[in-house]
Amino acid sequence: MTAQPGRLHLIPTSLGPAEPAHWLPPAVQNVAASLDVYIAENAKTARAFLKLIGTRHALQDVTIHTLGRKVSAGQIRDWLQPLSEGRDIGLVSEAGCPAVADPGSLVVRAAHQAGFEVVPHVGPSSILLGLMASGLDGQRFAFHGYAPVEPAARARQLKSWEAVSRKQQQTQILIETPYRNDAMFDTMLQALHGDTYLCIARSLTTPDQWIKTRRIADWKSAPRPTLTKLPTLFLFMAG
Amino acid sequence: MTAQPGRLHLIPTSLGPAEPAHWLPPAVQNVAASLDVYIAENAKTARAFLKLIGTRHALQDVTIHTLGRKVSAGQIRDWLQPLSEGRDIGLVSEAGCPAVADPGSLVVRAAHQAGFEVVPHVGPSSILLGLMASGLDGQRFAFHGYAPVEPAARARQLKSWEAVSRKQQQTQILIETPYRNDAMFDTMLQALHGDTYLCIARSLTTPDQWIKTRRIADWKSAPRPTLTKLPTLFLFMAG
Image (cartoon, rainbow over all chains, first blue to last red; front, top):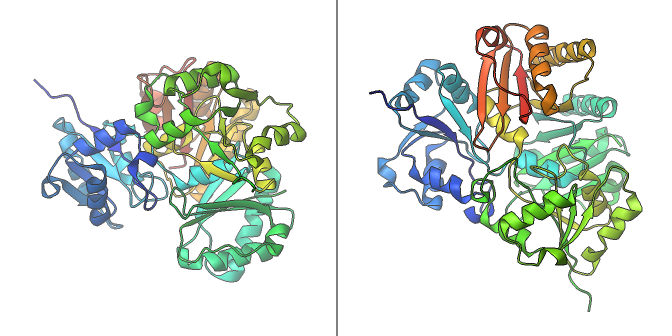
């Protein structure tokens, strides 16, 4: 008799300090607490997550594989091996939804290639929460990850995305390394058109959450937002 | 003494038949159950949602404003009036996260313009769940809404998005009216390159959930998926 194959569960984690009741459905918390094999971007934050949500296993009995940048396809296939023995596996990201804006998609793709079932679970995504709260067009949008760091290249890239936004009515979404948030904000005020709407979505789901949408011209005369070292999503749309 | 202004809560609803414990965090359910003024795309589904999550009010005591296509800016401002009196308001979509792929963003933008606080809550988004589960690149992606209906225009548009995907390594995401899902699938098999990865994500979060990623060439020899009249997300990425 062959066991039913296991499933790869995509388990969202918190975006910052906040109680799970605010960002995790109980059935997802229950699945996450039952799993004893995880693939994670960072073993330490994965353990903190398991502690927070109340894993049913002793932490030292939970296997956590660390998904580094240089992991090989063969290594990922080995990690997924328990699935063929009928054991479920969890995939978690450093923060938010796994396989979005992180390397977890390699694991998911390998699971599809081997014919295993993949189960995405509901949880917090800064991209989606920011888009909802921005008031910008949610019918068409693009997430770009990071913009170039070099100031002139960054300004050029922002203008080019603004042109796409104008032509396609598409909201543009990007993130920045927290210590560069202020520089990004300054470049946006300089490079984008005065009529363009800019939404700043900071520290989503945490007590520091702050979300504001204004036209670039209005941002220029508004008090400067505090963004230093706080996770921030930038969204804009040509007006 | 002036009351603290109210907040506009963005409350996600289900994507299909499934218990709230699977898709709604308890704290969000609690906020949703406490509100007695809603703006909704559809009053009937909004009432069904309130019943499902156990509103603390008699249904006939909950005010539900219906957000039609032709609603005026003045009308939306009137609906938001309770916020200035310190009363909170909920915004719900027909399914999933409000203000994403629906007209709710007009309400959110009006709230920003009037200086009110907007609070996005965690819940199910087919776009995000599909992206997570696809195994396609989640570092860069674009959601396009609907493709053109006319077959030649549709094929041209798909090829053009495939070219963008190849150039920018950007995952392309679209939806289709459920009764046209089969036609969309056929056009994709014809128009896209054999190496392109296509993910079909059907009936997410429900018992009919089915998610599979294959190259176009492999879809051609695989059993045809059952998509007729079932909500389906299409995601593809040049290989």
